[in-house]
Amino acid sequence: MEYVFEINGGDFSSGGNASSTIKRALKERNVDPLVIKRIVVALFEAEINVVAHADHGTITVIIEEHQVQMFVKDFGPGIEDIELAMSEGYSTASDTVREMGFGAGMGLPNIKKNADVFEIESVKGLGTNAHIIIYLKND
Amino acid sequence: MKLSEIVRELNLKVESIANQDATIISAYASDLLSDVMGNAKAGQIWITMQTHKNVAAIASLKDIQAVVIINNGTPEKDMVMHAKNENVAVLITDLPCYEFCAALHKLINCEI
Image 1 (tube, each protein chain N blue to C red):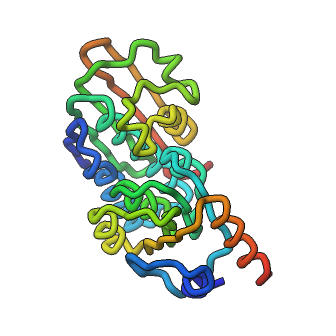
Image 2 (cartoon, rainbow over the protein chains, first blue to last red):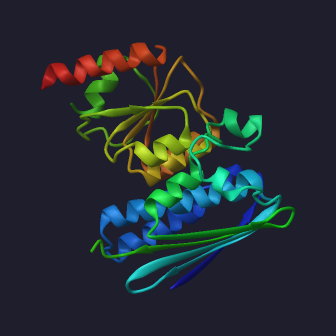
């Protein structure tokens, strides 16, 4: 099953819609609640990253028999130093975003912590692509 | 302790009620949303000063029973609406964070 979500930069009120839809779909499939939690955390952080940093983007979620794949593609400023962006506490979020409680520099680390596979590439001035895989069985 | 008893004992203002009979054994206090996303646990109460819609979305995603807004804060309308739809209680205390946490801790632990 494939889901495609269009995300607009700055549209915080829609942040969480994709995670919410996927959470429901996984519950209906009786996926292990602990695995659902990991998927939801990773997907939510990915959504918020697009909303907080990019002009716009697309998140494609593919639910397969043994895994969930998430492809996050955004058009925006890109990430200059991915290694730095992956370190906890580092953020380039605006003051407005920080006042909302985002931009704590925990987004990418949260994705990495919860993903079985996490690949990210970015071109400065163009945008960022991320690929996240989480296996549905814990073993 | 049941959520409804916590509401009564700590004199909380109710913006949106849900999960009244849920048993609460712990809480998470934070204003950083990724911190809550990463570390809060299902069934907890979330104590925060954040009042926007994403708070309700995160509470729902994390299966949090209730959000308590400290310092008599006012939740935004779309936060309350979203919380109602997602079955998350929204409660308000006039206490600051530390004082509320201490009162809640005392209340829950006295019972155990």
